[in-house]
Image (tube, rainbow over all chains, first blue to last red; front, side):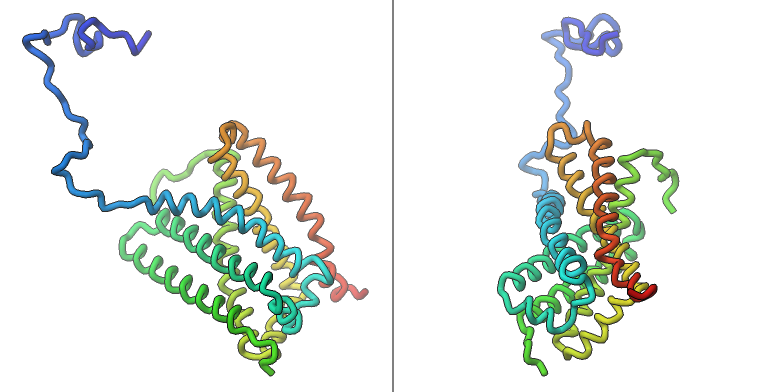
Length: 162
Length: 126
């Protein structure tokens, strides 16, 4: 059975029951699309934030794959693995602006990527508005604190602290 | 609890669950990791003392778990990007998941010696 089958009047066989009640002199009423925006409807209060967040997850994700896997190789695999890590090792790496930028970029992208991921998780599972508010408040506070702390540490690192 | 949320999916659902769980775990570790690194601003001794715990056999096992979580999240994330942006991505999502799992197994086997070697030497002697 075809669902595209129509009579000459444009009304399907079910609703028109074979013969249309509408003619040229008695036209069918014009039904406006229910959500059509007109000059009277209020301005949209929503921007494209969710779309931007969706795109950010994919773009930052690709960059993070390179940054984080490189980081794991250096810290845990090459040159004796975790055993070599200490203050002297950190000082040696942060003597180079290349690794400072690497770590700074990794910090910002990973924190924002993770925070947005957890925001999604909270939105999915916390149903009461108050719970969502508090969980997200805690999440954003911890995220801002950690990003600022990490940034400060990278920029003010002093190899001759002692 | 919301009712009727048991979605009987297959590869698509379980990779989504694993992506979510590994993502949350990695994010929580990231907080700790930024805090421990911040100790380089306190004193070399404070940093070296805390980093010493990262070198114990038990934490080495946790590090292996962290590597497992990160590698899965990274590889499956690339699969998600392929599903979203590649025309045939959705059609091949299952094949891509099994590719991810295969690569993950190979990389995890390769990570055994570098990540856990020092712990084995400490436990069983070199």
